[in-house]
Length: 117
Image (cartoon, rainbow, N blue to C red; front, top):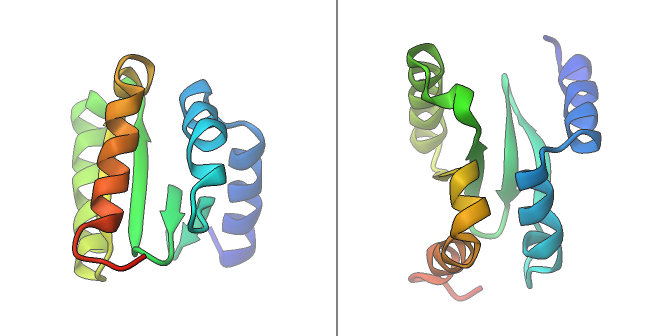
């Protein structure tokens, strides 16, 4: 996909977020003290959520991410993002549905650990 197609795809994804993405966005990240972007284009990737101030990417994984091919792609993607200096946090949809406050606490701790944000 070229850059224009990636931006259009990111817009589509913002309009059709999963229930778990909507939960994290509307109940936590949207009103967070620092700005977050959802469905942000990073070169050949679109990440679920990105916080510029903390250089942090948050990804939510549905059941398809536990298939071997998806795991390999996720691992490669994470490695590339980490190599570029981003921190990547991954949570399953089960985490959002059953341990939402723990996910929020984890994100908070990652952002504020050793940083004055």
